[in-house]
Each structure stands twice: as structure tokens, then as C-alpha cells.
Length: 461
Image (tube, rainbow, N blue to C red):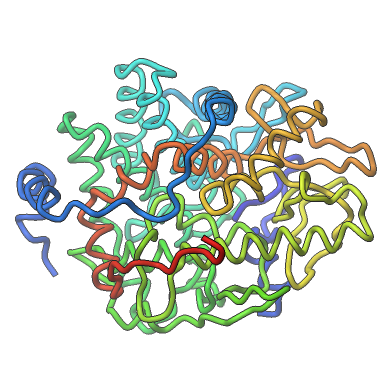
């Protein structure tokens, strides 16, 4: 999902998704969809259809809640300080030990940043006026000046001008992450009519039917030089948000069969059976930062429970690796695509993928906070308390290796973002509750066939 930014990369450099693929082998808008006209109808409908308490709700101790609040405050500072106040675009990464002169922004990091503004205002980290002004500046820039193709945005752009950098692709998944942030802002700042209208216009400009013109399996992206990229979103991964947003569009919707087209391969490890891919842990987290899958399932799975099982399988996988790398234990685990002492690496498991060497990636566990909160909190508190060089002014550095006494100097926007959003979701469900008020999100899940149900209680309860 991103390129390493410590060095400028050549135009042929591969993104996180391209590396992953190589490693694994793999109508017209309804008047009533206008935000102003729809809000009254939606409010009345929400009151009638108020859901029961969702599964996965966690009661945190005051100490754990205070720790997560501190973490979120620091995470937010990244999105506030490492963004252009004029454009709102957020830098892909920054070095916390040196002057950060890079101007490379990430539209995915910007999507996380827009959501971070909403969390920060709710938590009173910044005043309402400041959060609203930054959100408005961002949406104005995205609507009026940021280059797009069929409504989709280039993956990497100059934070000051919005111009494409690194010959990056028009990205389907990174645009989806940006749209999730935009829709979250629309709901949180719903009293601000311009924010509401801009979010509405930006979302409806996206031409999902162009992306699916000759296929139910959506491409990863498009470039002016090559056309559509050859890779498709054909296996379970972070791409669920792309399909659900496309299904939720009114002017340019995806066909329903697109949701059923991608493969849901079953994996098994240490007695855990779940849908997955030959991919790092982040694939189980990103869509679930915004879409609330708790207590719902489609014709195939309960994806919240699936991510819980996949995370626990990953934890046990790391414990097995502890025989080879003794830093891994029940208080220190988590491997996902990240920096390493030798550069950016796609690694994880089970089954093992990549040259795992004992490196720990804090966002790997943090992104699963809502799934296994007690286990993740043990890890995060342990890192902060006993690995001081892994803690910085923006929370955790991207990665570190205690066995080699190596600590990253960089913080990465999307990994800081998944940490902040999942911390807030486990504390209050705020991101889920806010985002799921959007009719596009509801309609996408409805068209995909999601129904409420009562999951079986965990064994032993």
C-alpha cells in the first residue's frame, strides 16, 4: 500500500500490494440521496431500527483507557503536524529523528487523517473550529484541485500541490480509504453544509462502473501510461471496503455479483480455521476500521469473528516462532508489512512469508485491538514500558528488532492511522458508529447481503 520513502524510488518501484502479489504468487442520483434531504429520513429510520448491543464490546480498565488515550493523542499529532494546512494532504511517512523534508503524501494516509480529525474533536484534543477548518480545507482541495481520473485519486501526491509523484497508479484501495475518511467527516461535521456537500460530490464523482466495465474482479489501479494494472482484487484482503463502497454508490454502482466473485480461501492453524490470504495481518484490519461487521454476516462469513480468529492464529504463530526468535512471546508479538533493518519487507503468517528475523511491528497487534483487546494491550503496554526507543512523539515507531537492537526512525501514516482508529473503536465504537450512519455504507452492506444475527458465545462462557 505504500512505497518506502527513506530514498526516492525509481518509477518502476513496486507498491506494498505489488510486492505482496509477487511474494504470494498470486444511473442517475436519486434526489433523496442528497445529504440535506436524506438526513431527516435517516434519523427517523435509525430510531426505528436501533441495533442491539454489538458483539465485541470490551470493558477497559481505567488504566488501559488512559493508556489508549495517550496513544491516540500522540497518533493524532502525526496527522496534524505531517499534513499541509493548505491542502490537508498527509505525508506518507516521516523520520522522527531528523528533519523531514519529503513532500510525498499518501491519499490513504489522508483518509486516516480525516478520520483522525473527527476522533480528535470528539476527544477534545483540538477545538471544533480547528478540526472543522482542516477538514474543510482538505475537501475543498480534493474536490477543486486534486488530480483524479474517473473520480479515483493517485496513490502518492505532493502534499503542497497535489500533483502525482513516483508515476504512481490511480489506486482503487487507496481511494477507498480516502473515501472512508471523507464519509466519516460528512457525518461528524454534519451541521456544516459545505463539508456535507463536498463529501457528497467527491463520493459520487467516483465511477465504479468504469472500474468494473469488463470484470467483476476489480483491478488494483490504472496509469495513463499502461492502462489498468494486471492485478485484480480476487482474494480476501483489505479490499472489502472497495466492493462495499462501490455497491453503495447510486450514480455509478458496482453490480451485486462483484461481491460474490472474489475467493474466500480457508486457512487453518493450531485449530483456528478462517478465511485469509498469503498476506500480512493488516488485510484483516483495514476495512474493519470503518465498516462495522459486528453481529452481521453475508452468505459466506462473519468477518469480525474471522478477523478475531486470524489474529489469534497470528499470535500463536508468533509464539511458535519464539523457538527461533526468543523475543517473540505472549507479551511481544505482531508481524505485518513494515520497515526492517534491511528495508521495507512484506512478511507475516501463518504460513510464514518473508524473511522474518525477530522484528516486531506495533501496528500489527494494535490494528487488532477490537478483536483480541486484552492480548493486544499486553503487547502495546510492554513495548512502551520496556522498549523505550520504540516510543516516540507520534506513538510507536514503525518497527523494531530487540534481538539486533535496531529501532526504526520512521513513523508511517497508514500504520499510525490503523492504530489510532482501532484504539478509538475498542474504547467507544466511535468510528464505526459515525461511519455507518452513511447511507452509502448501509446500502453497500445491504446489497452485499449482510444480515444481523446472534453469534454463538465464545467457548467456555
